Image 1 (cartoon, helix red, strand yellow):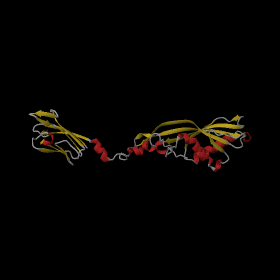
Image 2 (tube, one colour):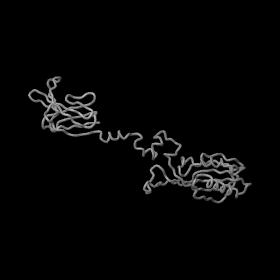
Image 3 (cartoon, one colour):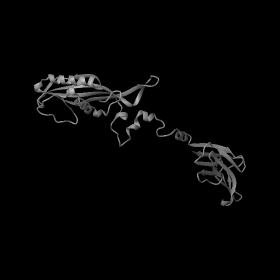
Image 4 (cartoon, one colour):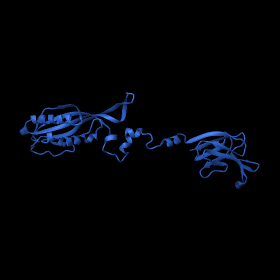
Length: 285
């Protein structure tokens, strides 16, 4: 039987679980147990007491548990369940209507004292005669309180969507189960931006504290390319591994830039460190 502290199995499977457990009790071996749904054919005439088990009402409410400071907090993945389990009891005419009450009393004794279910209340209606079934009948209800935690205890895996463990509280609280702390640090600071002032010398180094995957550099307020006296100048650069545009070199701690004439491109002047020019950069880890 499902335990209250560990949660229920599927709510819809509750009647079948109760039937299976009651059928295994030696003290009830003279009673036939079956579920109301799916319906089972009842023998006619009835020779022994028979009880059909079903659900009459299910109420799920928020479940609160105390945190480490003793403050109640709502559990997002479990609910408190109140279930009204219906027992349709049949007894042969030859046994009399009192046999219905006796069967119900024996069942409640087993559920209350031998099972792990928390039975809070039981009630029954009047005994009636059912001519079609040729038996006395009694409708009775047992109210059960328990915790319903489908993410942790359900036997159903919902394969069309996500595995049930994905919704477990312990799974969600495990911050490093899918993404490592290093990954998070890298994502939090994935793009680093900054500026540097040109010094006019041949080259300079910009320290980032890591080797970037990409670096984009451009001069603030100036066009990416310019032409002066027949010379083409370039105020922008792109660095990436393993290739970079002229004048940009990546390193393990950042990048370096140069001012130079590039003979491969007709003497194009690379201007990534002109004096007094503010250069902006965006580096990706």
